[in-house]
Length: 447
Image (cartoon, rainbow, N blue to C red):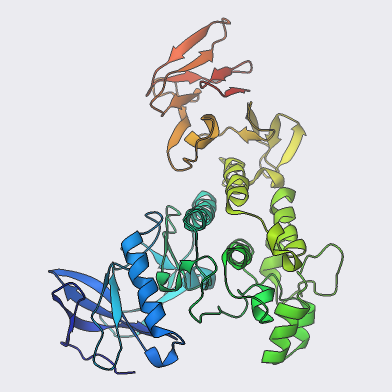
């Protein structure tokens, strides 16, 4: 591979030149440079074509993806191709990672290294989600991004911990390394990263596709939520050195989920997998059941792997079941006491929380100051999980009196204590009380 030099100019396919400013990083396929093009700074990925099986076909696929455009705004998508150099090497430019986003790897490590400008020394900086809501929102965004990709008829093929940037404050997600994305059924030599590849890819009996993406997606979600490897338990730990043969065994031929209900031979080991043990007991059964299905039935039957739409619905529900108690305890309703089917109680301070039941689902949403519900939860067929439709707020004139504010653009109807339904215009609110009923227009809710 011929590396580019600082200051070198690279000709673009449709005119203009990108000037190399510095090296951002390097990987298995090539090197990423910071460049200036048309007065703006971009990232240029320059390939080592000696590591490609089909460089011409790979470049053609890149061109197709650029012309098609990204499936959503959650992708750092290739923008412009370079011309081929005399030796056949080429690259493409893409937008730079925006400020405020951290790598998935740094999030899993819970820190990143930054150079102190005064001392020149590397210092650790925490990289942690600022709230439970932000983390679950990130999960929803990851799932939704791949739902959009697969609906476009394409597969990512190399889904792993290097494929995401996440804003730990908001849960916003950007999918990166999009150059291996190809139409479902096509492959240009990429296999995937060990630990993330579907068993059939590890065994060499299938190439990456939409179904293998679904398996890799489940691994990514498990690692983000449980901070561990779904297949690394007692059996894997016994292999002190994880050779290629043992990887084939533990991740391909005889992959056993650490919480397989029918096989306890690969359980997490205390002192090694403490995060997985700790977090597994926190999540509600319907989340754990989804991962059990993904890593038991889903291992041998790719067609039965959980689809993105199902994951999305599960995690939208999970986000709605977060309770932030005034005493500082924040967790899912599964970790709160339930005196009856409509109330949750904080095990730390004893505070009780009423709940709102929606006509389109069985689960109930706990009500606490600042809790929100979204358009997809009150509008039939809506897929909008980002727009806040309602929020529990405190009356500015009567401290301690709580009410629901209509943050949507539609007028609701709410039943007041006198038994009459009143129109609630956008921006207006109404008090919560034991007999409250709300008609959102198609979906209703009751306390």
